[in-house]
Length: 166
Image 1: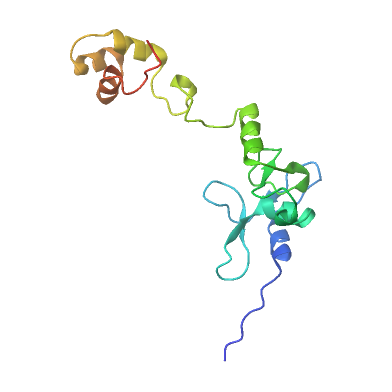
Image 2: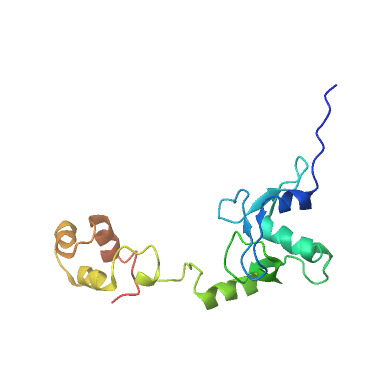
């Protein structure tokens, strides 16, 4: 009969993956990050899943979030904006609305409402789009004249994109 290995307590496994410095500095999570860059750790038992390291840190230093009255669906926010930080002095509890407001205040949110060059994925400037909109003739010729790709010229001229530019 095979003997099962004893699982270390979650808090002990947590601390083994923390690079703790001073109380003022970020404490870096040295374990695996999730797909968006937050530290994560397995809860321990098969099927229990993962927990984000900063959320676990908040609970280790405070109380489990589920026990706090009126905090259903609470998020643990980073005041330092470092996704791998688990320093409880850099964490605070809030709502998703608080988190979004914090991102907006700090200019960190990528929004689907951003337009033109304010959108981080924009390939063309407003001046290039105006030139495309003013130009006449075949799309291929307009693309060559303005330096805007043929497919983008077609989308701009049809009014599918950059509608906010006259």
